Amino acid sequence: MKLATGAGYWAAGPPADAQEAILEAEALDFHSFWTAEAYGSDALTPLAWWGSRTTKIQLGTGIVQMSARTPAATAMAAITMDHLTGGRFILGLGVSGPQVVEGWYGQPYPKPLARTREYVHVIREICDREKPVSFVGDHYQMPFPGGLELGKPLKSTVHPLRKHIPIYLGAEGPKNVALAAEICDGWLPLFFAPKDNQFYADSLNEGFAAVGKSRIGADGRIPEENDFEVVCPVSIVPDPDVERAADRVRPMLALYMGGMGAKGANFHYDVFCRMGYQDVADQVQEFYLTGRKDEAAASIPLSLVEEVALVGPIDKIAEELQRWRDTVVTTLQVSGPTSLLRTIAEVVKQ
Image (tube, rainbow, N blue to C red; front, side, top):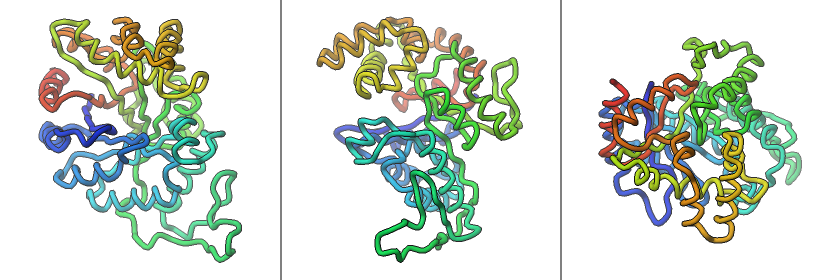
């Protein structure tokens, strides 16, 4: 199993140890380093800034929000980053949620699957650079059909370093996961639980079958010839006290389960319901949406934390890590302080 790490998005300011973390990850031969965006820091600028001091680690966005940029703007950024990194860039995309898309970007949210399919298609056409891009879809049109009526199909002035820049899709629902397998080069899950591996394998297989790719076998792992990556974020908190370790994860789970989306339109909440924790998710959401964030976090049982995170003594973490090896996950994206990276690398090698 490969390892990754990242800096995510930030609040008051950039994480103080991000530059140190990416250099340590590269020294430890980590697969990749990832950044994210919500409605504050963007994903591309920090990746370019911190990544400029690296030479071999892959650099990915996890995720660029589609509504923040037109497909052409995202393709331009991807081509630019791929050149500057010497072919180490991974374009992680996602639709985000309706509160952010409609509230922050002022864009309509409906039909996210159809929008994603069109968005990826346009990016592929631009990066392929075989001809000027002309596209007429339900969500994107190039050239724009109106305005001064002077638009014409254009071709990127920059020759891409790689015509096929890898695109990974951030997805949680089964249809979106299947779409990742069908049209993308990788999947970026969130709150993946090893016990639900078959559920996700079935979704991936649906997408693989649509384009004739090798299916996931009885071992639950993606065949090597498929060349498809699953980069899965997981919180790892070593601590002799398991509950104390879990307490460092609970507030984040409560935020996503209870506050990242409106009631009835929170896709993270849906993940935990499918996991078998609907009663917990309902309680957390009720607490969170009424401003009782501490109670929301405290109501999350240890069993739920242990479904999606590795917490407790290092021997326990090493033992439970095997559950992740026997899944579709190809790379674990570790979150935690820089000092943790070497420890986790040693555990994984064992």
